[in-house]
Image 1 (spheres, one colour):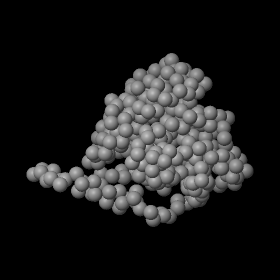
Image 2 (tube, rainbow, N blue to C red):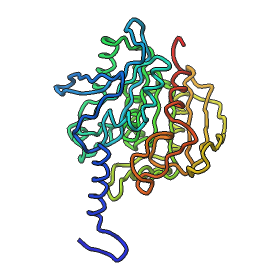
Image 3 (cartoon, one colour):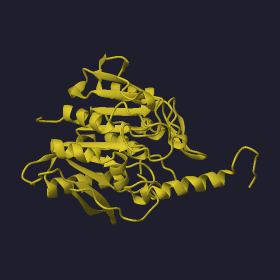
Image 4 (cartoon, rainbow, N blue to C red):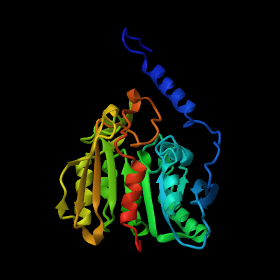
Length: 326
């Protein structure tokens, strides 16, 4: 191992990052306490026991079909980590507006999102995560009276890539999707042949240190994690697929927190087939983070968290806007 005058050896840096992750619970096998209203559950898919956390809204009775939000965690995390990333925001909105949230767990803490990376168990073994999510939706429809007409998926990072995959392979099961912190992988971009219109909201920071804005190698430090197309190519794909003909242009939102180092703009593509709008939020100066959420690692590693918008509220507003029988 070589040392330089100004740099620590990369092995030491990786160990330091792992220690930080471990201290945050991302590498811990300890089961944290449940949020109020949470229930742990499991289903068996492809011979594997798959686990999840369900948050039932306040006053839940099981007598009325409720919208369902499937929230997919990022790589190295768990369903509970997704709850923590949002700081319980989706749960509070569920209590307020009356919907169910489910936080599934990936095999080996990584989703089989189609990048085909051998370093991750789920991708190396080609775990059927699409089948898992479909089975989970069926389980919640059958056991908790989730509304099959109003199923929404949101994912962060690796969970976002998995969301794109679901939108490509089982769009008929979904009412709308949202992705935070990633553009489409090159594999999926080249092989997503569906022409089913599906409303989608995408959020990405211009200074995300893991996901290159203009496309290229996804990476965490020296670790190469597959390639992604640019955010412009990603948005253009969905605009074309949904047949959108009207573009709002780039509209900057109020700078609610001038100290956070970010500015947010929104682009809306409308007049789409079936009302399947495409909405993009660009976070100028934003990192690999959840706007308004938990800064799960220091800025020097993952970049800034914008406080100008709250991703939970923005995403739920988008889902509610596209809900059947509102």
